[in-house]
Length: 291
Image 1: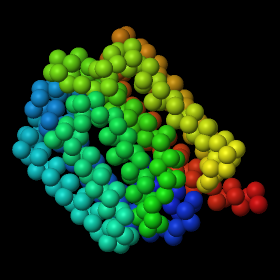
Image 2: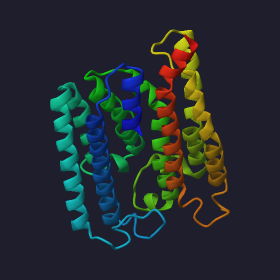
Image 3: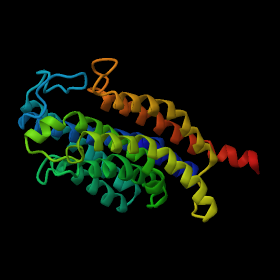
Image 4: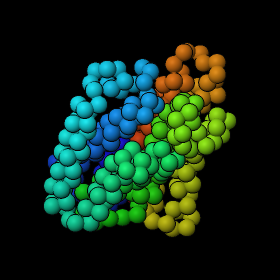
C-alpha cells in the first residue's frame, strides 16, 4: 500500500512522469524486504516459544512446513534480493534514496534481531515507519528523484492501520508475551487499554484525513488534499465491523473472530489504502472538472 500510494502521489501531486519498471522494482523490493523481516520475526517468536500453537494466521514454521534453518535461508535470500533491487533504484534515481532504504532495512532487521525492537515495546513505531511512512516517501523518490514531506504526512492514516495489524496480533498474545517477559504496547496497556488503542488505530485515520482536507485549505499547507479523499469513508463500515469483533472478544460470534483480528485488520488496510490511491489519482480529473 505505501508503494502504491507513494507512486500515485508522485504522479498526480508531484507531477512526475510514471516509470512503470521503477514502480514494479520498488513494489517487488518492498514485498521481499517485508517478507524477509516477517520471517525473521517468525523465527525469533518460535525460538522464544511465543508462537507454537497453530492458528488461522500461523506461518510455515509453526505449521511444521519448514524448519528454522530453512526459514533463515529464505529470509536472508529475500532481504538480499530486496536490497539489490534497492541498489538498482538508487543508481537510477539518486543517492538520497539510499538513506531511506538503509533506514528501512535497519529497522526491519532490528525488529527482532539485535536491539529486538519488537520485544521492547517499539514494534508499533517500527512498522509505522517501515511499512508506512518510509515506504511512501521512498516510492515518491523513485518516481520524482527527490524527497518530499507530502507523502510522509499524507501516508500517516494508512500507517496507523498497519500498526493496527500488529497491535491486533500483540493484543491476542498478551498472556503469552507477558509470561515470556516480552514487552509490547499491548502488554503494557492491558486488555481494556488495548481495546481503546485499537479503536484509535482503526478510526483515527478517517479523522486525520478530514482534518488534512480542512487544514491544507484553511492554513494553505500545500499541497492541498483533494476532496476525493472523502472516498476513504467507504471503508468505515469495515472499521465498525472490526470494532464489534474487538468488543466481543470474550464472547465471539465465530471462534476465530478475535484470534484472526490481525488478518481482518490487514483487509481494512488494503481497502483503505486502495481508496487513498484512487483518491490521489482522481485529483487531476477533479481539478480539470472544476477549472
